[in-house]
Amino acid sequence: MLLVQQRRTATGVDWRGIARLGPDVVRLIKRLATDPDVPRPVRWWLFGLLVYLILPIDLIPDFFPVIGYADDAIITAIALRFAMRHAGYPALTRNWPGTPEGLAGVLALARIRPPEGGDQG
Image (cartoon, rainbow, N blue to C red):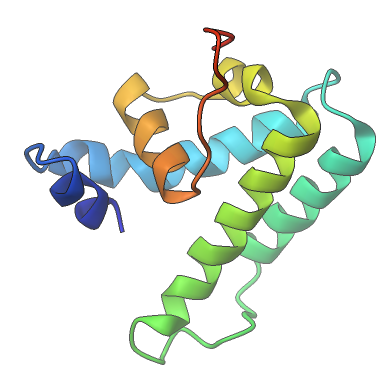
């Protein structure tokens, strides 16, 4: 999905960045789930997401081409939108472990827009 986003923005493919994106997203979710400034219900949902991502049981088994892996990405994007809505953009940026470009890609894929007015963290 990041490849599609990079093609939309006409930037070159950064394979190292793509390889780091998955672990960075998992670390982001873990950091948000353990951040005391994030509301408790949001942290519970994020812990649930971590358990879902770790367990080998999926809603759609991974042996189905494309959609088997897409369910994890879709659920993660929904969880990030939920976290953004309830914890705020500063919580996402404060807990992001990767590069600014990686965060921009993840936010674009999750269709999360930075707030207007420069409140970026």
